[in-house]
Length: 547
Image (cartoon, rainbow, N blue to C red; front, side, top):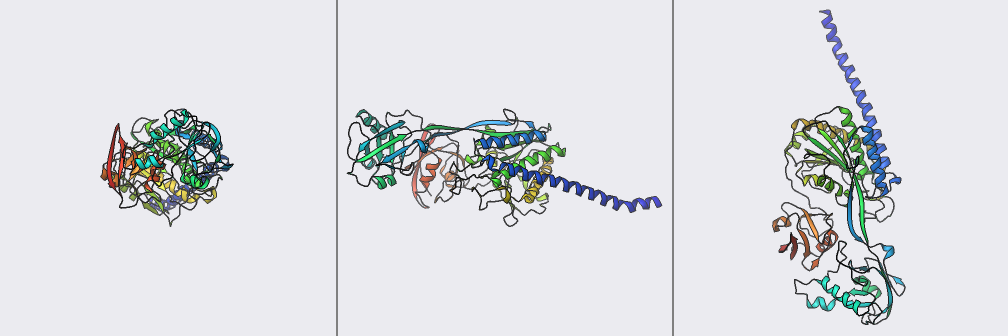
C-alpha cells in the first residue's frame, strides 16, 4: 500500500518534469527555426542578390542557396536537372532605349512617350531634312492618317495595320529614307507596338509620332526639320528556374508547399511602386515565404511524419505573371495530382491589427473542419474563401486543386526599395510556420480532399473604371489579350466569354497585349455600351456589352 501511495505521490512530479523537458525541447527547436528564418531572409534579401529579378544572376544565387539547403535537409532532387527546373519566358520584341532614337533639330525625343517604332519596321538609321507636307526622294517622309481614319470611321472591318504597311511599301519604292506616321485628328488610330509581331519587316524604318510628340516637336507644320532616327529591336527571352525538392514517404497523397523567390531587381520590369532604380530586396515579398518554405522542409523531414509525400517548390517568374507555377503544372516533376497546395507569399509582416489572412478557405469543405480545430495560439486570423488571387496558389486552384494561401497583408513597403530584412517580424513568422505544420498534420488523416470552386476577386484592375471580370493570361505570346479564367457572376461570364478566348478590340480600341487591353478599358465608364471583338479558336465573334 505504501508503494502505491509513493507512486501516486510521484506521478505529478514525473508528469511535471516530463512537461518541463518537452517545453525546453520545443523552446530549443523554436530558437533554431527562428535563427534560420532570419538567416534565410537576410541572405535572400541582401544587396548581393540585387533583388532576385527573374533571369538575373541574383536569381541564380538564390536558386543555389535554396538547392544547397534542400541538400542539407536531405530532400530528394525533383527538378529536371537536380533540384532545378529551368524554363523560358518569351517577352517578345523589346526596344532598347540606348539603341533607339528620334532626334529633331538636335533635340532627342522620348521613346514610347513621344514616339515608337512599329514592330515590323526595318532596323537601322536614317537622317535628312523634311516637313510634314513635303515628300522628297532620299529624305524621310511624314504621313498623316487623319483622312484614312475619317473615311473609315464607320467601317467595322477597317484594319489600319494593313494600310500602314501599304504606305511604307509605297514610300520605300519612291525612295523615302524613313516613314514617320502621325495623327492630327481626334479619332482613335489604334497604332500600337506589338511586341509579339512575327511578320516580315519592311524595307525602311517606320516610326509613329504620338500626339504628345507631334505637339511638342512639330507644332509648325510648315517648318523644315532636321531629323535623325535609329531603330533597334531585340528578341527578349529569360531563363528562369524553379527549385524543387521532395520527401518521398511512399504515401498515397502528395502535398505541395510553395513560395516564389523572385522579386523586382532594380525595378526594370516597371512593376515597382516607386521610381527609384535602387535594389528592391523584397524581404517580405517573398524572401519571407521562401524562408518559411525552407524551414517547413527541414521540420517535416526531421519530424518523422510519413502521412504524405511532400513536394517543396520555390517558384520563379511569379512577379511577371505566375510563370513558374504554371510551368510546373504543365510540366510536373512528380506523377499524380497533388492532394492540395499551400502557398506562402509575404508572411513576414505579421501584425495582430492587420491579422494573418488564410485564403482558399472555400476550396475544400475539409478546410473549415481542419482550420477550426487547429489552435491559433497568438495569431489573429482572418479567413478568405477564394482560391484565386495574385500569387502561385491561383495556378493550382485553376487545375481544381484545393489550396491555402498564407499572407500577412500588404504594407507601405510593398514593391518598394524599402522592403528590407530588418522590418520582418521573425517571431510572428515562426508562429505562422508552426501553425502551417499543425494544419498539415491535422489534415493528413482526411485522405484525398474534395475540391470546391469559389467566388473570385477581379484581377489586375487597379484604378480601372470598368472591368470585364476576367483574369489575363500574362504568358500569351500572340496578338491580343487571352483570357486565362472568367470570374463567376461578372460581365464576362454573363456575356458568354470563355477561358482561351483572345480579346482583340473594345469599341474603337484595338489591343495587342495585356497592357494595351488595360489601357482600352480606361476609355469607358460604368453604364457605357460597346462592342467586344474576340477570337475563339479560328472564329471571330462580336458581342454587345454594357459595363
